[in-house]
Image 1: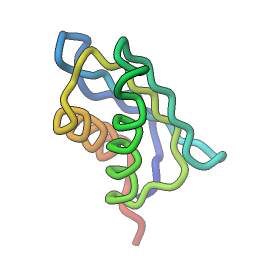
Image 2: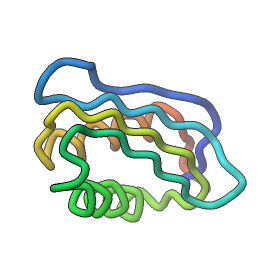
Image 3: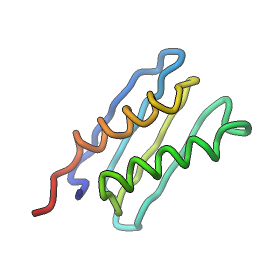
Image 4: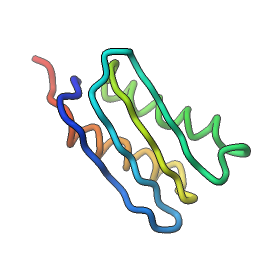
Length: 90
């Protein structure tokens, strides 16, 4: 999948995450902001990377502002933002 425009998914509510995606020419750039980053940052990055792998995304800038989202919520937010911003390559 190729990222062709900016997109957003999620909210800034508690137990949710706001995900911003943009096209990038520098591979995958992941920015993660979370109050629990010290404890769960590695797991959160794993969830983000897994979803990007599943969707076949290589070049992307993705910023995640987390407010205590569970893995399933984080995964869904990343997927939604990516699908809103991309096009499937034929």
